[in-house]
Image (cartoon, rainbow, N blue to C red; front, top):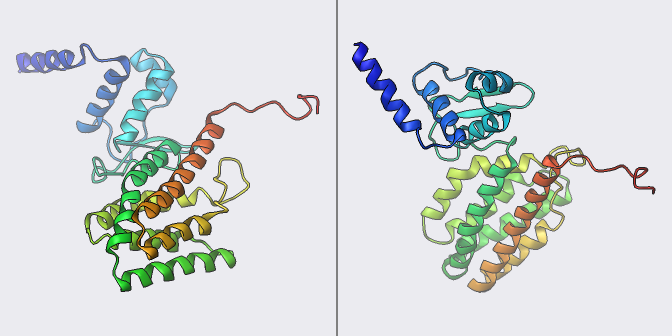
Length: 259
């Protein structure tokens, strides 16, 4: 038995050799979860304690935790700490999305830009009359919600889904269904508008959608592709600005600038 334990230790050390400090700590924490040393729902030790336990800097701990968060193994809860996620969610695609990580929303938008631009082009050439009617009705619904000060979240998603279905390729709507939690989550960043750390609403949403819808209606694939790309890249740019605001130190006040 002692020989077996020593062999296990030796094999673990062999895996760690050559890894960066971040990878080593991430591997160690991952094994703690896999072995049940820390269980789903358990809170990780504080950053300071992990720094002491592993004899590394706080920056290394942060990076290692970020790796496991991106894998969906850990989740951060603002003002509370970092917790082990439910075992059923670990490894599930897109389960690591979090409002605490604007970068995860940016990753999702980059994926959408790659897929939905082509979906718009295919929809322009393949949409049926019934699908076109659905797209037009949903576009109108988004506009009505905007005029009445209502949330556009569900109607907006439904419009993008209708365009995906109009490709006549079931994989496009399947992808949107898979990433729907992240799309809906990103809309939640617009709640509390005007407050620090929230996303400024897209004031040109209806205009951007109109260009996409009109190109699909006219059967112009290239124009539909470019209109969708402009729409999603605009969103991507806004989230990047929000990320910069969240990580940048406070700037000088107006009085400090001599104004």
